[in-house]
Length: 320
Image 1 (cartoon, rainbow, N blue to C red):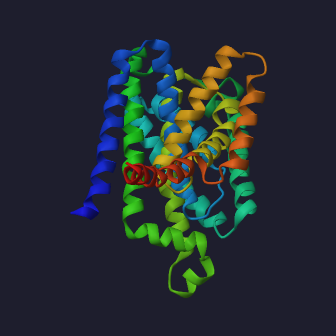
Image 2 (spheres, helix red, strand yellow):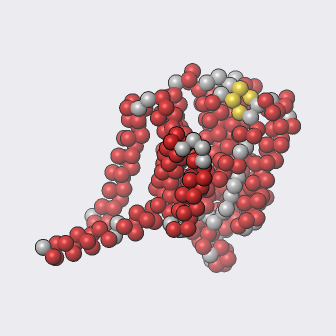
Image 3 (cartoon, one colour):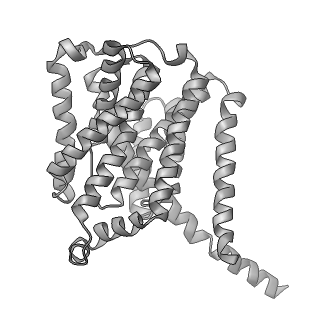
């Protein structure tokens, strides 16, 4: 029974977080609802990138899949008159198929070579979007009606459902044999292959599965802001934010990327409102300091404090 206690506490923590997120639209105004919606969306991006990073892949393909999802949903919605939510789901399926093909081509690469190849993937897609105006609208992009007729509460719950799916997927990976295969692929790839672990297969599997989430987020964002254009849809900022939020919160966990996303989005918005000129400099300074002084992210800091609390309590009790 003692071994079940940490799991029970963990479930209580997730339940409390879910309760706050569900209640949020009913206790806040449109501005904070928009901020919460953007934070949840970036949580999806950061968490899905982290799951891929558990295989040791330094991928910047999130920008490409984000834009691919936006354009796939736009084309499916406008050309085939499919409902918006269905087109968002289909965009995720399109990204998974493309990701499996891209994975087979690139995932034998390592480190910075993978980053360059996946970054080029987004640039290629952006060029295709610009050069095919008959299909994508070219530089003018594609416009669609507002999601749910502009109802932000329903839109928020839709992206919240996507985040819940990403959390369940991350926890399933962490509690299944996939975790061992991913860790072996990341930490000792040559030894893992000698022991019979097909590292390329697991990398391709992770690449395909995690590509669904940025594509769905991109499709959702398109229907939320009602327009997608190449330079914004395939912006490198999507990939950079996914990486930074994961690293800032704590890698290879479910909680870390979500914690990093929440803290950085709130900090960014606070600085932008209160220091409109030059806030990005302070924001960048915070990020650099975090990388230098918190190598295991915020979650690492929290975990380093937690064991000391019982010791201090025991010491106080002994003194008493």
